[in-house]
Length: 488
Ligand code: CDP
Image (tube, rainbow, N blue to C red; front, side, top):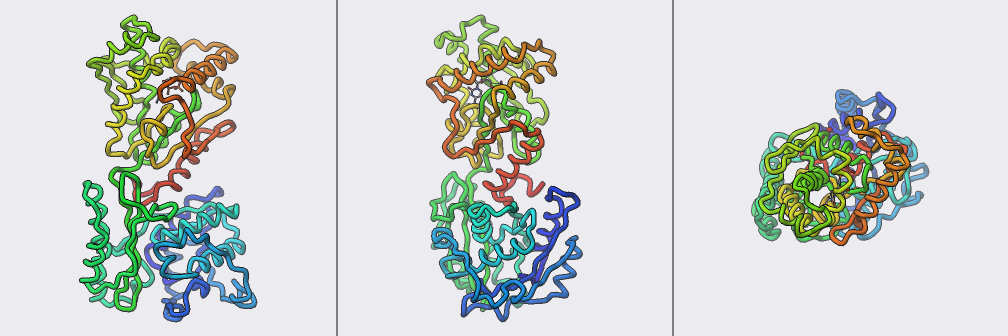
């Protein structure tokens, strides 16, 4: 809506690198939309400064700025137009509750602007989180051909979220308003430290500083329904009035950093893409298959029958399995002091690993170790049961698969690259199908797609396309504001 500031500048910069066609053109729309203001709201006094907007947009690298009139956007007047109605559950809380009709007006104008411009990507700030979620729903529910990209809230040095309405604040009011972001940030730290959250205390602290609190709520960041703060990510959001100026701000509460679970059958390419994805996002990478392979290596070394649970269990006593999660590239794996990184990839280990991995005792031992490794989050784990048994509360779950023929082709290439003999494709496909069968029919933690996992079938996709798709899915599930690295 104009009155552009550094936050908008950041959106414009972020937009430059994300189009399919490069260099992409970035169009900035400036339109103070009458449909989203209530009768008693500040439509008339909303800050407008088109010359300054042109300067900010151009300095940030925009290709063009478009400032249509109300008549251009809504020929015949806004009241003669179709309106889009946002589902009531998405606007029952936060700003939706205190500004009836506001999000219907936002959705209507954005649908109209998208139809006029037909952009490839719509870039929006996370500052107006409820708006971002509603517009994502709009695009998904109506099948609009545009990608929605959120960008982390930009803050000034004093922590205030950049906002066009900040320019209405006097210097004294700005000082007074600082307690809004400060207490939100403190609440986020407290929750991270395991302390509880007291919304009534927050409210009264703001009221004592002469901020009139419109709402302070915790909701699920994606369905925007009220949520008790727990291990899952939640959104703490507030709207206050400082004098006449309405300010909104939020923070995300989490007791640990994000966790991504990638499961799927043998040879789906999980390791390659997961490792690259972890590196791009600054997440630790945990290859749980390597742990089952290392135990299998040990069982074979001890000449134990991999099908005999008691004999296998004996070898788990005093087991010392080490993985260096922080290391990029091929992850070193040590078992009882032996570096087995290369040996665990041998066809011999591959043949027995499913039998070893099926024992309850093996699963219990390795699952417990994996959960300890993920206690602080900030990690992507791949395997067969990550989303179902190891990290059922993962922020993003992906079931990565491909047809058996495609997986056999990839496995052949992998064996060749590692210098192992390559069986013919028909035999490889049969081996892969047998391993799938054994992994998905075992009694403990079978290979299954979690109910809330996204299925990604990678036939016909390049490695880069799979990685980009994973990053897109991560963006939809994890606000950029809580990413280990702020942006890529
Ligand atoms: O690389 P590939 O697809 O062959 O499999 P892997 O990830 O190295 O895992 C090897 C085997 O370990 C699987 O076939 C499963 O039997 C077992 N596994 C498991 O049971 N649970 C996990 N979380 C990971 C692997």
